[in-house]
Length: 349
Image (cartoon, rainbow, N blue to C red; front, side, top):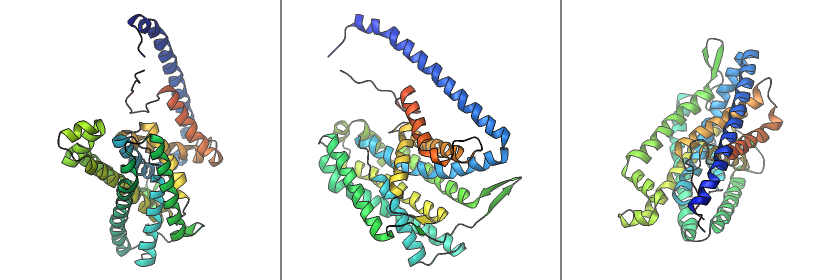
């Protein structure tokens, strides 16, 4: 179905007015949020800084998990609902390897060295599980309707949950952490070691991933495949290999997030994948699903939004945490459906 030039011209003023109204309402909302943040900053400046640092820690984890969603969606258009449970499986595997098998149960140079080794191992586990899922399930459904892939992803999610339940048990397990208590004192502000460790590990991982995608031969193949599978294949690119490599990168990021979560928070639960996966997916959509920088930005924004709502003196409190996060997502989707850094596309009718 096509529209004539006259019909398109007639509809243009309505779109202009709608876009203008949306921008005005969006500006009013942003001004309201800014005023609320300033109010809290003036009321309790030290608490504001502490909460912002806690949000930075959570946002780092969300960013690592969100990258897995956006990488897979960007190359094959699949929302991999099993990705959150892959993060959970990585955290459970890291706890067993680091604490039970290697005996790293207290902060020490030996424990920190072992934690680095285990991080590499669980990143490999995450990459292997993700690639296996792609080769055994998703690849066979690549030409099938989208609904078939989504249902398959949900099925794989239940399988990973069952494995996590078998390894971790049905309840939350508390583990000794290798990250010391306390932190670095900067004036009146204390930066927790957990925040330093998580952020200090996340930033190099994000930079390395960006370098791989933008500068390496395999990264170029990934980007070409995401634009057009058939054209990439005609140019000599192994499409299956590029897609598998993408799944491996996403799984490795989930593995790193699992180790960092366990090492800093000191607990594991087989149901963690649902909550963290849902929030990380929200972060990917908020920043612009399919956009790497958008996933990182969305992860940090969600982390800060949660922290500010839960920890500021004039916030709604933890009971409203999920409602606030998804309320922000709904508002962004209303005024900017493509996400903050996403590219607007138009469907041809």
